[in-house]
Length: 104
Figure 1 (cartoon, rainbow, N blue to C red):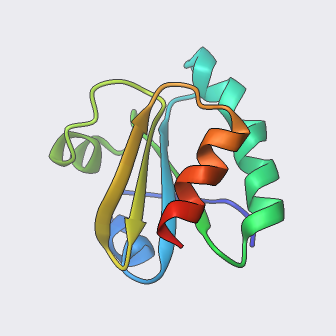
Figure 2 (tube, rainbow, N blue to C red):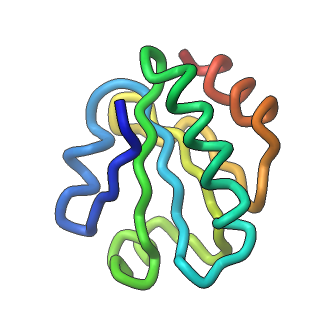
């Protein structure tokens, strides 16, 4: 499954089923650019366990504000629409893999 981009309007629908990792990011964010290839690798290796979606914080302020996202990248892991974990800042691949496996 490819990483998809979501909006304020589609966010709730995208996280309501299964395990979904949401990357809150912006194009100007250096650490966000660093984590993007890590997320691509995880998506390629673990798409059977987790869906990965990205939400541009500049273009989608409603969701960003309602969830209290103050720093990016923020990664929030949802299971059937409920937040189960959250990490802020760049994370190495093994840390994110461990996070996903803990909840799958």
